[in-house]
Image (cartoon, rainbow, N blue to C red; front, side):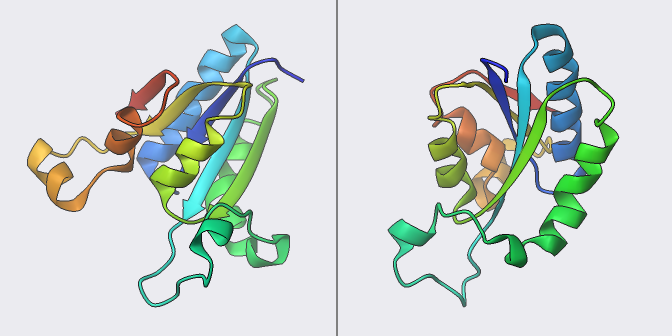
Length: 145
């Protein structure tokens, strides 16, 4: 087990996939493990009764097959022969809050996130998980274009 872990925010987009690629490339040199994380936001119509308890809970395995198959498994499969120790997790909640909480694990040394390259105005209007993470986590963050 590696002493350092790169936490990679992935969402099924090409930008998230590039962030995973970059993390694996750097992990080959550093010996770090790579942990993929995807966070499914609560929809506006379905909210948990106790947000504090439910927002950061892992989804039960029987609730995640479609998410795992669509987002996580393709990345894990792509890098299975890389020699890098890889794992993945799925959570429900606010992506920024959930990832910020997972970064607190002592072995996590870096955070990787894809950056779509929208304008500052677009980021202000629609928001950006990568931009918000860059301003909220206390570990080095690699924003991958």
